[in-house]
Structure formats: C-alpha cells, structure tokens
Image 1 (tube, rainbow, N blue to C red):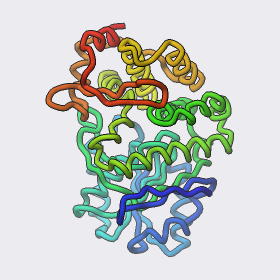
Image 2: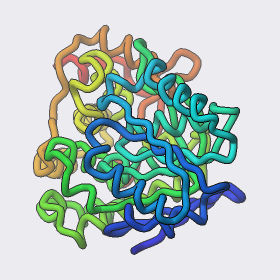
Image 3: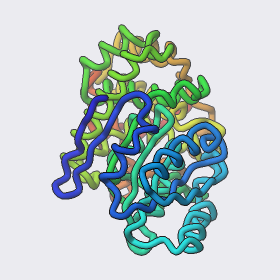
Image 4: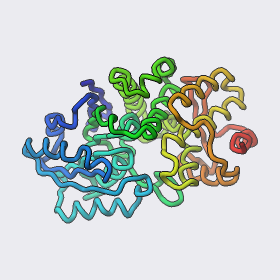
Amino acid sequence: MQTLHVSLGNRSYPIYIGQNLISSANLIVPHLKRKQVAIVTNTTVAPLYLEQLAQQLLAAGVSVITIILPDGEAYKNSETLNLIYDALLQNRCERSTTLIALGGGVIGDLTGYAAATYLRGVPFIQIPTTLLSQVDSSVGGKTGINHLLGKNMIGAFYQPKLVLIDIDTLQTLPPRELSAGVAEVIKYGLIRDVEFFDWLEANIAKLMSLDTTVITEAIYRSCQNKADVVAADEYEAGERALLNLGHTFGHAIENAMGYGVWLHGEAVAAGTMMAANLSKKMGWLNAQEIARMKAVFKAANLPLSPPSLGVEKYLDLMGLDKKVENGKIRLVLLQGIGKSVITSTYDAQLLKQTIDL
C-alpha cells in the first residue's frame, strides 16, 4: 500500500492506494467519529462491493446503513440527492455519522454534497471505484450536482476524511469507463508534469491492460499532482483552475448531448484537443506536440474530435462555465506540454474557428 497526504492544516487527510483495501476496515475505523456509517452506492457497484465493505465494518463493530441509488450521470441531480437525505433522516443519523461514498464520480460528488449539507455538515469518506474518480474527483473536496442548464453548477468545497483507492475495483470496470479515466490521468502530464507525460507515452499500452505496477504508479502520480495543487489553492482562486484543462469545452459537450451520452472523460479528451488546437492557432503549441497528444489519446481509445453543435451553441454553454469572470470565458490553454495557463486574452475569432469544425 502507498500513502499520500492532502495538506490542508487541520483538514488534512490521507490517500491510501493499494489492493484489497475495501476489506481493510482497520484503515477506515480510525477516521470515524462514532461507529456508525451510511454507505452510499449505486445499483451497479452494490452487487460487486457493498457486502464486502459492509461485512468488514460490521465485523469491526460498526453500525451500517446502506443507500443504493440509480446509476448514471443523468441521476446526479437534486431528486437523487433527496433520496440520500430521506434515508439519513429516516435512520435518525446524527452529526457523528460518517457517510461513505462507494462508487464513481457521481456517487462521490452526490455523497460529498449530502455530507456538506446534512445537519450543516457530517464527515464523509471516499472509496472511489472507477479510474476517473480515483485520480480526480475523489481528491480535493469538490462536491455537487448538475443542473439542467449546467454541469456541477450547484455544490460545495468539502473535504473527505480519507480517500481509499482499491485498484482491484478496476478489474470490473467496463473498457469505456477505463478510457474515460485515462483522460484525466493524461491531463496531469499536460498541465504541469511533462516527465509524467513522457512516462505515459512509454507505458500507455500497459496502463490500458491494467498492469498492476503501471496502474498503481499512474494513480499515485495523478493523486500526487492533484494533492499538490489542492494544497496550494483549495478554493480554486488560481492554480487549481488549471485542473480544468478541456473541461470548459467538455462540459458543454456533456450538457448538449445529454448527461451520460458522452462520458465525462470522453468529453474532456475531445475538449482538451479543442484547447490544444486553439493553443496551436495562437502559436503556443507546435504540430509535433499536437501529434504526441493525439497519439496518447488514441492509444487510450478516446475521441479526438468533438460533436458538431455549432459555434453559438458551444459559446452559449461555455458561458455557463464556473471560470467565467466579468462575462468573459476563461480557458485553460497550453504553452507547451507540461505548461498550462488560464487566460481570457485569446482571439475570439480563433476560438470560433476552433469550434467550427
């Protein structure tokens, strides 16, 4: 097992990465205020891992409540959030009850937001079961739900007490979901870690085949990058916004196509190539760098091109992005592999050319 720490003063917490960790109640119990938990999961993950986790906790003397939600990005909304509140209230859960998110990014975001708001704040733990949630959404305390008009527009910054990453859960992950997670892994190399990008180029085939050593290293280095950024800028006032490479375009794709039609990582991959193409038009990236990016995304079975929605539709949806400032869309662009910048000083015509495929 490997351990990282997210350094946030008295709200710091560990990230454990290893195999068979869902069966390690001894890693969870020390982080509980009292021996009562509510495990929030979904209809896909529950048959795979819920009993394993619950039985380990029960054996450690922990009282367990289970909440099973429908699966999918389409359910990341206020109606599903209320199902969590209903169960917590019906079971008279107190402020000392810890919520455990067992699932992918949707479950993590929903559970985290429920924890941030139920009784004005209860503890929660992240046990992410998809690669995307393991390397991105489970770390850093971003929680929330979607709105019909925009993705992740309602939420809170609320840190977990622990992130437990069991790489064995990736063995049951559908190939498309694995690819979606790799998009976020690649992101870290592009925005701030050129050595990691070089390593990914050399190891992408092993990563896609879930080689234990390679997947563990990829998760560790991704989480290390995320933890460093979050420790420096918890509330996304500056550097943390760089983690949104490709997301402004990507969220527009997800919204326009209907949540869940394009997976988040697929939309981010296409959005990242849009950001790269705009960066090239601005003279910041060269053709060789674009080719390297395309090759890695292609090897991960990720889309290189976005859907054709029309310039106005893209701009309208991108205008709902959380990085918009004074009415101006701010974008994360690349000045080279491993060097990113957030800017609103780009040529609007070049942006329209990038969108108008």
